[in-house]
Image (cartoon, rainbow, N blue to C red):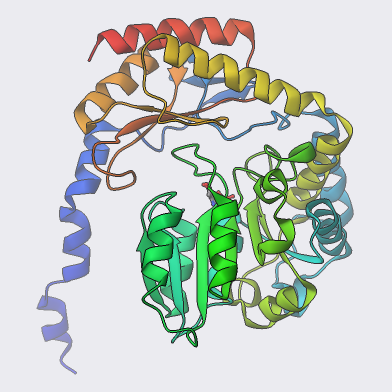
Length: 398
Ligand SMILES: Cc1ncc(COP(=O)(O)O)c(C=O)c1O
């Protein structure tokens, strides 16, 4: 090989990265990757300015709960900082197994498997079970982790329109009975805040011999009896083959889970690349998730307050004539409808001391560019006064 020739050839991938228009726009407008200097409760500090955080998914507000902090510290002392290994080799610990048993029991499933990120769990809840030759029928708005899982699986992918059982039924009718089929949806959609019509999906799935997978990252700890999630809310826990979720929302930690029948979880442990080749959930994050999980079951006031605050925040937005896209959960979008105005709106909120996240197409459907907010049980009346004033001001800027 001629070294001189290699040195003169252009690196096309590096050029593509440097020239990338989307990255240039992101750096120019700078709405993402903003690093806070400090945080306390519902407040964050950016460039010295104190702001009310309303885009965190910390639904139950447990991130500074004394029992959670104590559990995290104790686990570090007892188990060290990391497992430095994957579950099948050197990474399994008693605390993983205990947490798995607790979650399975809580959800009403046989078994559960935890991993280091919700993204990994949700991706593996698809990629571990579907394979080449299968067909996956997925709601158009499913989370990116499920999209990654679908692509990794090598199965054929068919998308049905968001939250639309009729469309699902139509596209299913073209498939042969002998084809292995999976139906994939979120229990609660993270951007839209919509609850899936899961009962209808179950009915259609059963009639067509489908394997049902539900990502309940935003339903777990929020919906159903004591926060048991979307399947419990609809009374269909036994009908959903696999429920996946995250510890980074209601449980104020990181990590995720997949729950189902024992034979399915055994199968996942044999086949999930995300489990076999990725280090296990760390001791302190597992301990924080577990402590939050215990608080969810012993201190119901956090969940009650979450729903009081959800209604309060939604009433503020709707009182100002803003469009919350029909959300009926703590994940509350404010739809602005185009990128430029969404950016102006977001900036105005920032100016008035309210931190939100802007989400534009293609992350959301065209025309649904939005400001994504989430209620937390920790938001106070003082926070709501600031939020109301800021949204009233922002609405006047567009
Ligand atoms: C629906 C959904 N699934 C999965 C995930 C991934 O969870 P995590 O952020 O804990 O990795 C998220 C987080 O954004 C989510 O909203």
